[in-house]
Image (cartoon, rainbow, N blue to C red; front, side):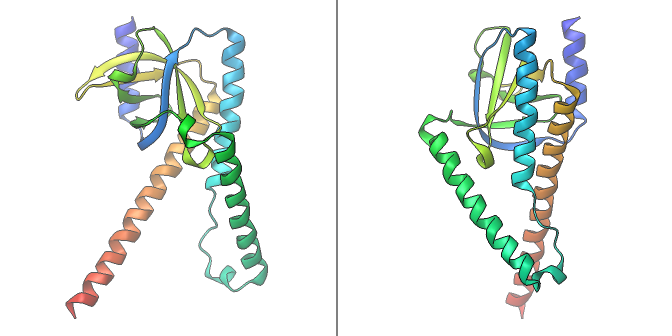
Length: 198
């Protein structure tokens, strides 16, 4: 039964877009009560909403660049982002964060180095993102399958549907930004390359 569930989860994980990166990550033993699960789902939903609001970017609209009101709003937005960053650093200094680890995750589960896992069966993963370091995602997981390169697949357990949807959106937005950034970098390199060829 466990083997079949693990394979089904791994298949679902493999078919979806994943967040790839290095984040502050901690994994600890976790034996939750139903109240713990409800509290975590509520907290994770709030964290995902906070991350989404911090990541929102103004749509590129050339008409807005000349609008003084939009310019003033952009300046205010920048100042608020700086203040939020300062508060975030005061709430949780970098020295108190767990170390950064390579991680790949989506709404189904995540792949992490196996050396990070305690021997316990029930586990809780804490993911701290730079945009909101003091508010980690806290996700209950079960051990899945061992992978190549000292990695292991863990699948999420007891996530509410809205948290799963929020994770899916967060991963998709991150992936979309990376693709756009890669295209922009490729385009600027092409332009620079053509200038140097002249």
